Length: 341
Ligand SMILES: NC(=O)c1ccc[n+]([C@@H]2O[C@H](COP(=O)([O-])OP(=O)(O)OC[C@H]3O[C@@H](n4cnc5c(N)ncnc54)[C@H](OP(=O)(O)O)[C@@H]3O)[C@@H](O)[C@H]2O)c1
Image 1 (cartoon, rainbow, N blue to C red):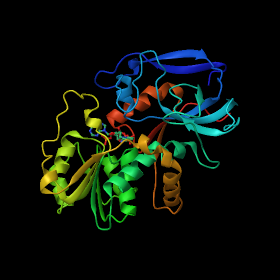
Image 2: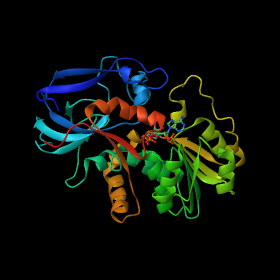
Image 3: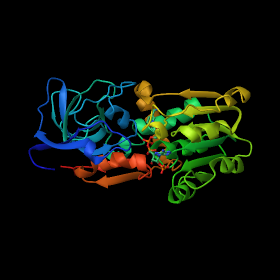
């Protein structure tokens, strides 16, 4: 950290194609002073997620888009160093939308409210499994996917933050065949050897359709989709009767929303009496305590594992975000920008 200075990355350009380091400008600002009801937080670990790209484009769908010149938005975890809010004391560890910067002033309200991190919870876990990402995997799989004993479950983006948890949660709920789709041999090996998936498909080198048919001869009861595009189409062609298709994300289309084709195999939903449903986890953030309790139980009894992929250094904030689109991460991509005081 640079003493007395608030390092920031501001949005400099709307991304075209792959996000570039030059889409951001480095800036040094004064450390802000908290207003009424606000706290000043020293940001220590930043979490990135693919949806930030849409916000860089200025899209307003479930949240407002970013303006050029604004501090890049992102979730973070850090420590309260000044407080004008009776609910937060100096020294509290907290998480919230602190952005690509060392210090943020933030109130307790809003769509993604400031939340205390319980003593003993690592910041990395708070930003991942006990935050929006973990809740997305849990809610999407259990309440939309509705896994039951004996199910065959296919997960795309499986070696990422949401996907690696979603597949394990299906296993915990009794699914016997959980196949992940990911972009490298290393990721496929990790899914099977470390994360308890029963099979994995490398979408860059395998014939995806042939491998799905081989690994799931009776089709999939649940397809948990993080990718969209061709992979969604192949999954739709391999559904079991009464299948559930969970539309969590569609990263393959985030760089070309205009040109992205719709699924041509959607009519399988009719033949297979299947259901396809999307969701946004923000609608369920009020259930954070309930989700945390279940996920913590599974972490503590060893049935759920999580991996964080941590880049060190403030200068690596843009690269951390870029990694999501180049497959540079395994598990949750985080960037550690400051050490504890
Ligand atoms: N609905 C919600 O409320 C909600 C909440 C959070 C996240 N999401 C969505 O969930 C998905 C996963 O998010 P995450 O934070 O867990 O990210 P992540 O999976 O950790 O990272 C993204 C991964 O996507 C893969 N990928 C990138 N481009 C791809 C492409 N063109 N085709 C196939 N795979 C590609 C990469 O792995 P490979 O090496 O395998 O390519 C990369 O590691 C995203 O689509 C995100 O928008 C939805």
